[in-house]
Image (cartoon, rainbow, N blue to C red; front, side):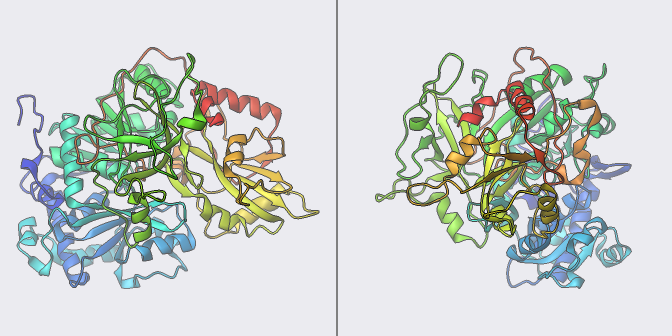
Length: 635
């Protein structure tokens, strides 16, 4: 331990998460906080051992077992992560914003032999054809669960490590996490993360941020994706710090929680920072113990506003939770750019068809791109990455690393699927996502899946779904509907149709609907998505929309709703500094004072539609300018 109390390597450089959990045994300092509940590190390790022993009784021993966890951020979540680590099992994070057959498919696809959930989520499971028998669905707030767990209380981590219950001894190569991303085909993609990679990520972040044993990591992003686990829980475990849990993100509860728990560090994705900036300012906004925030998609403008208001510098980065590629923001990163690759990394922008590296981008003095047609391509990592593949999806795994063109250029590279350009100074700029990928409120979506649902809408004979940039972070869903002859768009009928679709997720309804006589096509008769995307809502055809919401920050605390909690990490979890294949991400400087922007708390799309007027367009474009994102509309 360094003189300042900083953990040098975290739990003696443990190579597995199981070793990190074992190291908590005998440590009677506070390890977790949730409301009035306080657990010591020792109690967390003991609780994990008891659950691991239960796993030994419930799960088959002929192969590595997977358990699905369908919970909010409650203490049972890190307990089951730790239990799975000790038992050599893997956790599949189940997303409660999924619905119907899609939710059942996630559980089935990851071969879950056990499902851990709570009463609040039982209605989501009602009537589904699940692969898990009822007796293997454990409801953590049901008295029967405590009775089931009772006989195993008192089990120690050392007993589990010694092979109690016939459990497998984990190694760094043992699967630890399966967390969902979305691909262009719409097929389920559960990215793999081993115990070794997660432990290395924890050590790296603990060292990078100087995690101290008296630190408290505030976990307010949902734990069913990588952000909260990889960038929040793992470095706390590695550095001997405590965690404080929030069931789901709440902007209004953020500072009260930080003060109550003594939180010093938090992670975020997408709109979370903007939601916090939308809360009413207070003279005591800087009266808190926070030292650092780490995440993605806040943007330079809002990161500067956050630092100016709350006195906390945010560390921003671009990264892949698959471990494929990451970009660091350096102090000299210009506005609009993401940053540079870390020393030794070999990132490039290439033609997605041929793999040839593209020319550097030329920008005018105002930062506008002059040669986008020649310089925008796919970001690839031509060097070593820690990508470990997708569960039961060899096609998606191969697509990430296979070459392009007749010469198979780029075989073995990691292909991100994200569009970038690189300027003459070597800085990378994000330019959008491939045609069939969207990122809405930090949730990764596949346009093909949404199109299949909207294709059921009887008045439409053709449907195309594509991304338009959100004015603050990520994307919004836009749909073009080619109406049948004689049909007219009825917004109330469309809303009723959306409400009747059991597999429509809470973030997949279109924000904008463009009605057209026919979908534009390319010379090969494919839907011309690039043209649709470039036109966006600035097209000549009629557009209907579900308004984003009020621009008055005093009247909204939208993230208190379950369906608008940020979804971290997949695929854009922050890069983990120093981890194999994941460059370091130095802190973003606060920068000059920035005038406050008009904040917006987006209402869920699909609840109502009205015509998109010239006034709506002017107000929305002003919001893009406020957040320095208007240039994205032209790419």
